[in-house]
Image 1 (cartoon, one colour):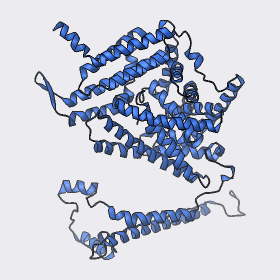
Image 2 (image 1 turned 180 degrees about the horizontal axis):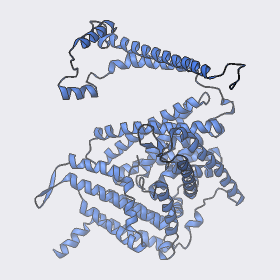
Image 3 (image 1 turned 180 degrees about the vertical axis):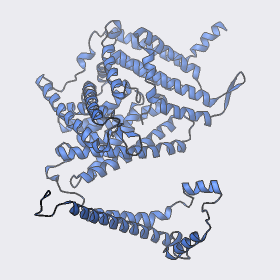
Image 4 (image 1 turned 90 degrees about the horizontal axis):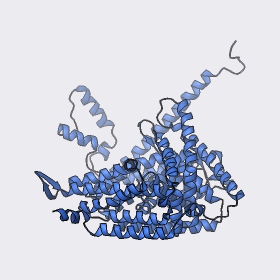
Length: 344
Length: 269
């Protein structure tokens, strides 16, 4: 996501320098107020750490590709947003000089796109809010993934805006946006996973190193099963009941391809077996085509969404319990009975 | 050579190049930073169709490269880092800007072709400028320049320490990766199961090192002052620095305003 000097107009570069400069000035003031002189060398070493760790490729299972660490979020989670932001500026400055990754003129824009969002939004708001009532592994994972996805999306959006205002390409704004956002959604997810893996490791080994950790945090504030279930149920209700109404009426990718290839989105099959199967489906389906039988209404779509979510959840839970039961049985079969020796 | 080895080689190269003596190192890094930033600023300010004007800015790079004895080939290699984004945006111009600007024989030259070419030239020139700046001043010199432009001491110290510890950590990562690869032959990258522990352990060791660094700095009398001052003030001639900055400002301004190549061509035409 590093912007190059060639891709930015002087006016845009100047504006971004002003924005990033204001954030840097605020950060310097805050770090001075903290009056922790030992933090400066730690910031330097942490900057080198982020730089070096970004050279490591993390294999993404099943894809054959690899991902990298999300520097801003990680630094904020350890040093705090202001110190993390200053450290990221150092990293970006060295990257622009040493590796031409970014540019001297575009530094203001790169600091804004990568450090500002990563540190102030990712660390200062998201991390802080998640850890407000205590720290836990699950919260670290949730905060890291949410933070990385959101900050990368905003960063990618800023790159598109800066490029658009620079007027260096004829590529339409929305075409460029449509290319940038989905790519960075995937990158954000992977970076979030990597960052969370590292932060959870630190939490298990040396939790006091994490920003916002307090000694009495251990065990406190962990998400209980009930709370997790309640949040998931509420999400299902909202998505199934309300968001499903906004679902696109256009055919999905597969239907579109079929329409192009065969002229219709629904292929007709002939034969006794097909007719019987269709009959069974017709008789069994409670809400055919996501509607009440014989009626088309928004309520039908909502009810089918909620009902679908409930049925899928029930199937998943039963499946899990069945697997657990099966696993336990297998385990007891393998274990020798009490009082009996393994080898007689 | 993999990415890590390239980075380590680059750091060694910067350290050896920036330590050269002679008249060249008598110019203050702040003057060099000023001239380079001015060059980049003027280069990117050219209109997307003004390719000839833009090309004339290359004279600065040509003169600096020869005078400073810098490798043009090594500088060109660095363009690959930004090539993807430049190519993506530049290629788009070919399709979205089809206005015919002029004809070259029987071939129509469109606005998209020219704007794509100017984008590439801007990319190459700005990358060269950053490379030359680094090779002329080194990171310590750049930090001295930042310090003299009023950047807060804490921020500049962080940059300098990041650079100084970079080589140590890169070598540490290289060792860890080598050890990992020996235990997982044929595997590309770090497996998902080791994501946390691999980088986490590196982080823990880094933090320990950070603390040791601070303790040793205190023992050597560190009191919060800038570490770059001494490095930036060796053999510096203020007069030469001012002349250097003023001369290049005038020259670059002239290259930006006057179509130098066209004027030179008209002399023979």
